[in-house]
Image (cartoon, rainbow, N blue to C red; front, side):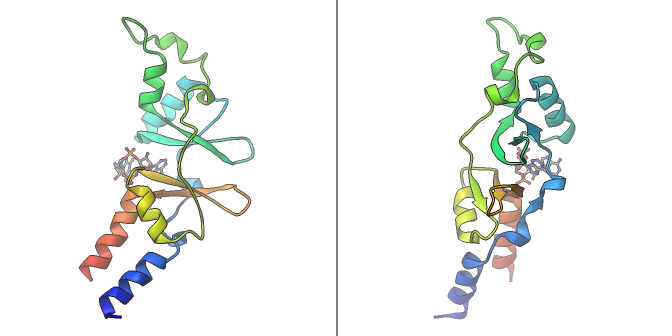
Length: 146
Ligand code: 4BW
């Protein structure tokens, strides 16, 4: 095995724990929040999509500005007055990528191709934080610059 392929296999089998953005720093909403609250959090945080958690701090999905606006799209206008009557749970995306804290970098890299962020859970499925595409790319970049 060459030094390069050894370094590559070390990168791919590395655990993702060092790259996780901890839950305290992650903007999120809860299932029962109304859409006006979710839109406020999305606009104030500046993010396009954020995780949705339940009361037990488990990840249940993710919600984006686009899903919110789509849900109030009337025939001729955005029906903004409906934002307070619809809950996050009704319009969020349920099928989202998740990984455990001990997942390998190879798995995270593959998952990040189609998802800007991945929710990370512990062994009891509690929310730990997220892994972003930018943190994955930064590590790949460091590897190739060395
Ligand atoms: O507010 C921002 N601060 C910083 N430092 N970068 C930002 C911010 N808003 C956007 N960005 C940049 C990042 O490079 O634009 C990219 C796309 O953002 P997005 O998807 O469409 O809102 C960001 O790329 P990223 O860091 O790889 O993040 C990928 C996605 O992960 C974001 C967002 O949906 C989610 N995300 C990232 N940090 C988050 C978060 N969600 C909630 N809380 C956080 N702290």
